[in-house]
Structures are given as structure tokens and as C-alpha cells.
Image 1 (cartoon, rainbow, N blue to C red):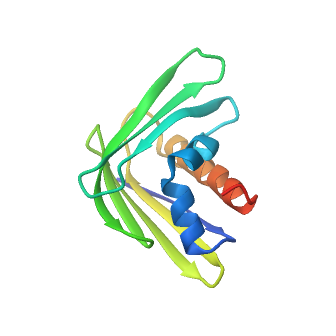
Image 2: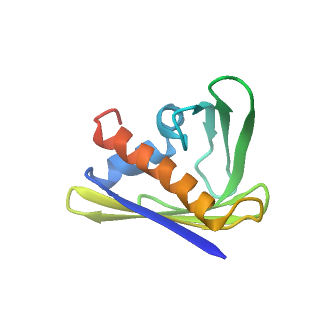
Length: 137
């Protein structure tokens, strides 16, 4: 089953694309809740290139590497990747003047409910929106 999350960001598509793919930016916005953060990010933005984002609880109690391989790069409109567990993700960036709509569609996993997965990914997307619109990008 596919899950989709989307938001519109009040910034131009180049700024949105660059902020989405820059390791320096990713460590600023990539967390589903205030008690988590991304401590490291590596991105080889090329087809066949890999990414790794180290996500950790701020209290140090747990952490994991979110990793995958890029399967599609069509800057600045689309990218695709496969996570290391085999699930696919498609991300689109659609410009509308000085705003950009970001849509992520990803394969669901079986550990968490659909609602939990949607909420978690949407929360990360909203952190991204706040980061970019806050002028930090």
C-alpha cells in the first residue's frame, strides 16, 4: 500500500530542492518530533548514489540510520529512491510562482499503522516547511 503526504511551501522550487537535498539543511529539519534529531547526513545525489541520515532520540536512548539508494533524479522536479528495506519513495516538487508543493509517496511497512506512518512522515514534512519558510534555507 502507498501512503502520500503533501504540503505547499512558500518558497521557490530551487530553494526547496536545495534544502531537501543538502546535508547541512537535512540535519536542521529531519525529525518527526521535538525529542528526535538528525545528527549526521550524507547525500550522493546521483542515480545509484546513496544517502544516510543518522536519526537519534535527543536523550540518547535510541537511534537508527535511515539509508537508501537514489533511483531517479530529475532536478528540481522529481526524485526517487529505494530504502534499504526495499520500500520505494517518490518525491515531487511542483512550482507555482514563488510557492512549491512537495508530495511524498512511499510504500507502507508492516510494523506501524498506516496512520502512524502517515503522521510521522507528515510531521517531518511540516518541519521541513517551517525550516524553509523560516528563512534558514
